[in-house]
Structure formats: structure tokens, C-alpha cells
Length: 465
Image 1 (cartoon, rainbow, N blue to C red):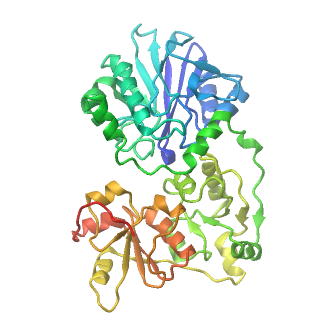
Image 2: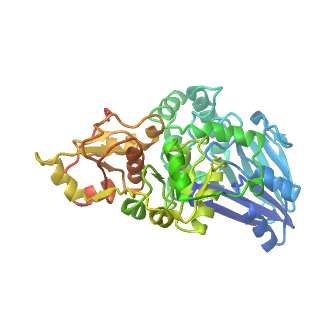
Image 3: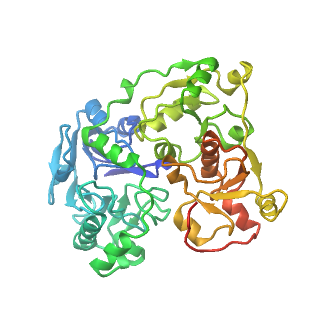
């Protein structure tokens, strides 16, 4: 049996292709499906089947386009209520392809319709070889239980406990575990970096599987959940109906600097996808920086939302293409265009350039203790990061909250922003500038640099700003 994992780092998303005797299955496909078509051609197989482990909330699936281009059948949990042609599957459903088979386990908990797929490679053994666990069981974690508009987190957490202990943990210890996400995904909160595991390893090391009572499991799973981006529920609905093919999207419109200036005055969002360093050195005033170098699409969905239709600012045509593709992966499809000629054209038109000052950890520490040159400090990390350690004088307002409102701090006083390493803080700095903060600084290297310099920290719960 041929088996391959495709890992999309920017979304921490894993999808899979399995094939036997020329017949292939794709599980949890990403939005852009060319890689599966290429893999099928390279291995001389035909994609006949597509499984979705659940209605994904953090990305838009390519299941509908892949089915249209291959003639494959889509299979989903019977509780999904999907409106496109598909086969609703329940416990015990079995699909044979060549000398391999998939057996479905209904595993509600992360979502009501979640399923896991037990794989048997009959050329090797009649016993199960692996299980594709979707977002039910991760490496070191389990799926978050707060993504359903119809069930409470406590209800889903109880169902998840039953699914884990009544179904997945009945598999043999040597069965391999392949989840749909890895470390960095917001679908869990404690994932390890490995891309696969075994039932036995997870039974011994996964914190959630060490919790013996159902009541305690529910309590722990519903406490301190990471913030749920607004776009999650919208992506799940897109996946319920099936997204349009990427080829159906119109070409981006070129926008000249003078037109963009007018659009910005009317409230347009300009999204600058260049690196943090390039943005800090010079950018279109009022533009938002989400650099392609990090979890670009997730943060765009979180801080801009799916209803945003920004104008892109990039350094090259390749950057524009990459940014547009990655935005479609989370459901941001309608864009107002791109700045023709980029920042160079903006400069050539004689329009003003904004900058963001960069400050080192040592420089910030000196400013904190200066009576003549005081500074506000803003920590935009998530709550568990703050709890572990933070700068004593810092205010806390996680980047996830910026879509609701900016922090209530003095717009006229200098403000130094930091996260863990500098990526999120530059997003926050650009949003603060756009909101009217006049003297914004970004701490280079983030809190990692502060700790490496052995500067003082404290622990404790945040009080916000």
C-alpha cells in the first residue's frame, strides 16, 4: 500500500493519500488540490475516494474541487449535514480499495460529526495498521470541544471522552496515529511537534488520556481554551456546502498609488505581506503587516475576518500569488486588488512613508526604568504564555482580541509591543498605528530575547488593559 502525509506548515495541517492496486483515497484535503493530482500521476494511481474527518473550522477544504476533477466520491460523518453530493458514513462503514481497507469509527467530541478512519493493509496483516484521527486525537493532545453552535463545550467534551476511551483506545498499542493537525494549530492547545505516534505512546504520554474520570476530563478540557477565531464557524459552514474551485476566482485588479490613497481615506484595508523588517523600515501609512513568513493565513483570518477584502501590497508577483493562495485556504477570497508597483511606486508618486521603530530588549528595560523617557509595554501573547512569565510592568492584550478592539492605552504616549519572537508583535504594531497610536515600537526578538538577556520577569494571571 502506498501512503503519504502532506503537511502544510502555515496551517499546521496534515492530509493524506493512500492507494492500493491503482485505487487512491485522499483524506482531509487542503484547498489547493494540485499536489494530490500530481502525487496520483507520479504513482500511477487514480483518486476514487475522498474522506473528511469532520467539518474543518480552521481551513477551507478542497474536497468539492478534487471530486469534480477526479470523479471521486466524498465520504463524511452522517451528522455533518453536508449539502453537496456525498456518502454519509456511520460506525462500521467499510471501504475496500485494492488490498487495503478503511473502517469508520464515529468519534464525536471535537465536533458532533467527527470520524476516525482505521486503516488495514491486507498485504501485510489482517490487523489494523494505522488510524487517521482527524481532530479527535492529536499527538500529545485532543481536539478542542467548543466549535459547535448547537452543543455546549461540556457536552462535546463528554462525547470526546467516550469516543477516546470507548473506541480509539480499544485499538492495539502498535496502531499508528496520524492526526489532521500538528503543533501550532488552534484546534488543540498542547500538541507535540511529531507528525505521527502510536496508540500505545499516546496512551502513556498524552495528558488528556491520563485523566481517568469523565467529569475531570470535561472540567480540564473546558478550562483555559485558546481563543476561538471568528472565522472558524464560517469556515465550517463553507465546508458544509463545499468551496468553489480556485480556478473560478477572478484575476486581481492592479491599483495605482493615487487610487489606493483615496481608498485608504475611505477605510480600505491594505495588507502588506512583506517581511517584518521591510515593513518596519517603510510602509504605506495605515497598512497592516502580516508577513508571509509566519502563520499568515491564520492571522489574516483572525485579525481581519473573512468579510475583509483588502488590497495586497507585495514585493513581487510571486509574493502576490502566494498571499492570495494562502488567503483562500482560510476563506478570504474577495480581494480589492493589489498596489501596482508596490511600495516603490507609492514612493515614486510622492506619497508619505510610515515606519515602526525597533527596540531591543535591553533598550526597553532601560526605558521602563527611565523617569525622563517612560514607555508603555504591551504583551500580545496568549494567556498561557503570559501566565508562565511576563514583564512586570507590561499590559496584556492578546493579538486574538484586536479584531474586537485595540487595547485601551494612551494613544499619544510611546508604546513598545512584544510577543514571543516578533512576528505577532509586528502585526499588532501595524494595527495600533492604524488605530491612531502615534509612537509605536516593536521589541525585536520578542520575549525570547528578553529572557535570553536574563532580564527580570514575573508570573501570574493577566488583568488585561
